[in-house]
Structure formats: C-alpha cells, structure tokens
Length: 303
Image (cartoon, rainbow, N blue to C red; front, side, top):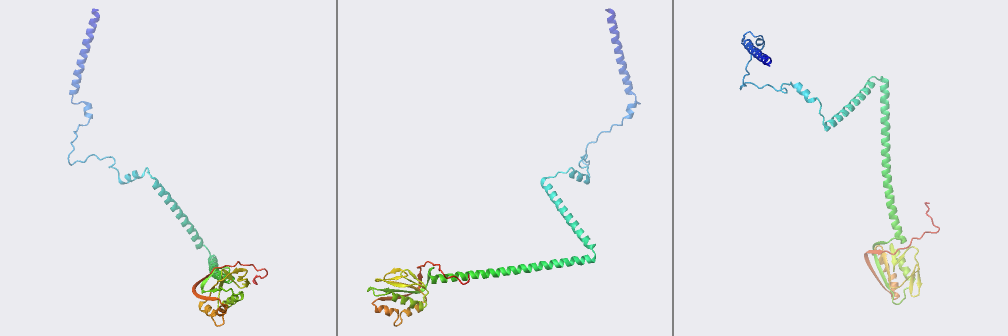
C-alpha cells in the first residue's frame, strides 16, 4: 500500500512539473519577436467607419450591364395567352405574305423569261377572254331588258284582262256594279201594266245608254225575257209584283229624257193609269247577280 501511494505522488508531481514547463515554454515562444507565423500573416487594418462621402457596396443586380438586363428580361420567356395568340396570328400572316410574294415572283420570273412569241400569245388569249366576258355581259343585259319588258307587258296584259273580265261580268250580270244613274218606280194599282210595257221600258233604257239594270231584285241581261203571269209579271221565270222598281246605271242626263220624250215610256204607262216617278242619283248599286252559264256549243275561236 505504501508503495502504491508513493508512486502516485511521484506521478502527480511529474505531471505538475511538465505543465509548468509547458507554460514557461509557451510564454517564451510568444515573447519571441522573430515568430515565423506572425511574419506570414498580413498586418491587421481596422475597417473604416462609413462616412457621408462613401457609397455603399453595390448590389449584384445593379452591377449588371444593359445587355445583361435585356437578356435576363427576355429569357426564360414568360408568355401570356393573348401574347401567344398574337404571335400565332402574326406568324400566319407572315407565312401567307411570304407565299404570295413567292408566287408573284415565280409568275414575274416566268413572264420575264418568256419569249416574245409567248408574250404575244398570252396577250391574245387575254384579249379573247376579255371579249368573251364582254359579250356575255351584253347578253345578260339584253336578257334582263327583255325580262323587264316582258314582265311589264305581262302585267299590262293581266290588268287589261282583269278590266275586260269586270266589264263582261257587268254585262253578263255575274258581278255587282255601281255608278251614277236613275231609279224609276211604276205604281200599278189597277193592274193594267203588261209585260210588253216593261220590256219596252228596258229597250228604251238600253237605247239611252244603260249599262246595268235590275227590276225588283232580278238582274236584266242580254237574254232576259218578260211574260205575263195573271195580274203580275214574270222576269226570266221570276214572278214580280207592283210596284215595279227599276235600278239603272248610266248617264242620268241621257236616261231620264229618253223616258220622258213625247209618246215615250212615261206617257204610255200613264195612259194605262199607272204612276211613274224618275229620280236621278250619283250612286246606284246594282247587286242582283246571275249565275254564269257554260255554253253548250259555243267555244272561243282562239282555242
């Protein structure tokens, strides 16, 4: 036991001695002016405080040149949808213009390289084509004029046909008519008026220019006939009674004097104790109609 304690004490003392020796050696080494490491390091310079006349260190972005900034702004590209659409449209327009210019250049080159005989032939063909187009234009204009003329003629023919149909309808009694005329009324209280007297009245009115006549609702036409039916009169098979009322369309100034001439219709009826009255009017309506009859044998000569 005593040996071990002695050994430990000796070891402790040895370590203390080496520690003291190391500190002494370090102090001597630090105190040497010719230290090699101190000579290799640069002298320390204190950082100057920023003054009013000194600029701060430039940022990396501010140190870029104009071209570098332009390249940085253009690449990588950042396209929006409207810009992409405009770019596509401009590309298509440029492509079309390039194709058109190339086509025109080819045509011009072909014409410049053509012989004189070929150029003359091309001009002749162009002149011929121009003449054909001009002839076609004149032909179309002529057809248009003919169509317009024929259309006008057809319209006029239709108008005249309609007017003729109306006139024939009035004469045939198939359409109503109106116009100036007279109204004649025959009062026959004695029953002495006969059918022949009424027929004479119709003939006298027609001679004076009557265009449409109806008697007591019966339309008078070219083949109208009168017949006695006891104490009354039958017109085309229709029995009518007094008073007999005539509606007549025509010139009133001609119709009334024709009835009142000496020995005429009015005097003849008054001799039979009938009373006759005639009144002029600016509008007489003849609306009694006859059914159009298809002829059995007569045909139009134009067929």
